[in-house]
Image 1 (cartoon, helix red, strand yellow):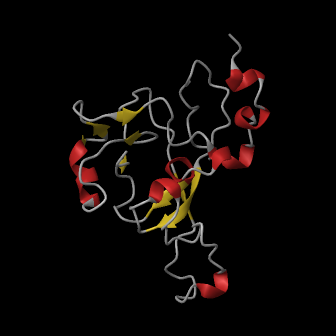
Image 2 (cartoon, one colour):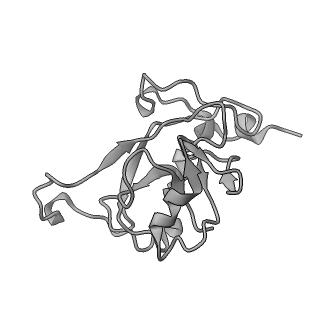
Length: 162
């Protein structure tokens, strides 16, 4: 069986140095390879969570609705455009670099995301998206991998309803 990750899809494995913070440790291997083109930065999709999966109702600067700088009314002093995301640790239950999925009630109560982790680690009872960490798949524009929400405080867990 061919390793499509490295043999067939060049953009997926392209390493772009400016996409990675120099202080980040090397990322963990996923799908049998560490060759994926990682990135440390995510763009703001704002303070919405419902339909964030499809980027249809996001209110951040990088939503599907193409926000122009001239449309930002606070003179940019209170506007988050980008944030840094950590690659995580050797533990795929770390809140750094991974996100929880199937978090109950998340669409109406985003604060539920805080209850599924403790001391920087997702609880063992919580499903975690370990196959695709949040620093991978920059090439597809999917908000879970390329975006950051401004709902919860920085350096907290990341969650998805599905």
